Amino acid sequence: MKRITILGSTGSIGVQALQVIERLGWQVVALTAHSNTALLHEQVRKFNVKHFACGNAEEIANCAAIPCDIVLNAIVGIAGLRPTVAALEAGNPVALANKESLVAGGHLVMALASAKGLPILPVDSEHSAIFQCLHVGDIVLDVPGDRGRSPLRKLILTASGGAFFGKTREELTHVTAADALCHPTWNMGAKITVDSATLFNKGLEVIEAAWLFGMHVDDIDVVVHRQSIVHSLVEYNDGAVLAQLGAPDMQLPIQYALTYPARLPMPAQRLNLAVAGTLTFEAVDHDTFPAIELCKTAWRRGGLACAALNGANEAANALFRQGKLGFLDITPMVEQAMLAIPAGDPRNLEDIFAVDNAARQSIKNYALRIMH
Ligand code: NDP
Ligand code: MG
Image 1 (cartoon, protein in one colour):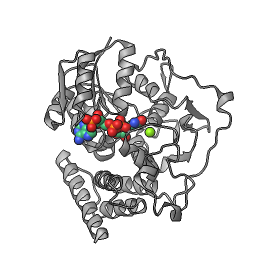
Image 2 (cartoon, rainbow, N blue to C red; image 1 turned 60 degrees about the vertical axis):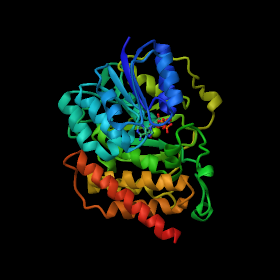
Image 3 (cartoon, helix red, strand yellow; image 1 turned 30 degrees about the horizontal axis):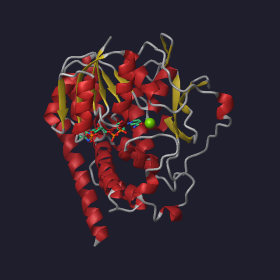
């Protein structure tokens, strides 16, 4: 039995994580939410939790720092960064769903984890797939941090394509948030579902993978795979390609991150390849969906550009969901906000939050200009 803290327990990942925890019979140390006090209190009662916080950033970071066996960070957005840092500083291993922690703060988060000798275990399904392809049985196939000796040549992330796959720019002119929120294969929170439609989610995942696996973005490819059964692949230097397959169900990557290196049974839907039938793979239409290339550009410019891109995307994503911004405005606006920030890397969290704020402000200014 392990002791676990879940940050963002009322969200899509948080709720599924508690289902996993209930089956495993683990002890819950702390839970946090942002505004859904009713569900948080229900969870606190059900799992007999002593520590919880709702909405107060400082209390949430304090919860992350309570000693435990693993902190699952399932907060959405940059709000997850301080809690990730707080968990690591306190010596807690982290299972990370909050990709924005790595996109905006990859330099600091990875350096801190390495200095403390703590793992960051991926929960994102693509990164879990790659992690699983690198850890077959007890053997680690990669030589982390040593690309010269590593036999790993490429990471290949799969993308469902989101709600608007196959659409032309013309067809995207008038799409709404309600259209974007109809995801073909995954049932997720609103922010990530809209990010899936713009393909920013996949771009953020490229940056996340670059940090987690020590790869250059040029060695990370994306391929559209509509069925979400092949969760991602790795290519070795002899040309061998390994993939992890499974029914689209986040409980598997969540459980694996929590129980690694153990693989425990799960009552989940089993993959039946004959029923799945045809699996398809297609190139990304980068002209219509330029977000992945934009994320790679940000990564090449450095950590500050990534933080700016992340903040700008969060702001633009929210304005689109509020009906205040057109779908096709999102990516060019994020690009402008990102390019306005000088290249370079952050020295500390304050640098990251300053750039995040500046980028959000530029998005608000652009949006105001468009509306008038
Ligand atoms: P949800 O929107 O469903 O849940 C977000 C959680 O974070 C909720 O518990 C919410 O609390 C809390 N939260 C929101 N804002 C804040 C804030 N400012 N401070 C502290 N807590 C906050 O998101 P998802 O579960 O879909 O996603 C969570 C993370 O996991 C994201 O980074 C996403 O990219 C990643 N992820 C999600 C996947 C999925 O299948 N959903 C798949 C892969 C990655 P409240 O409910 O009270 O608002
Ligand atoms: Mg993913």
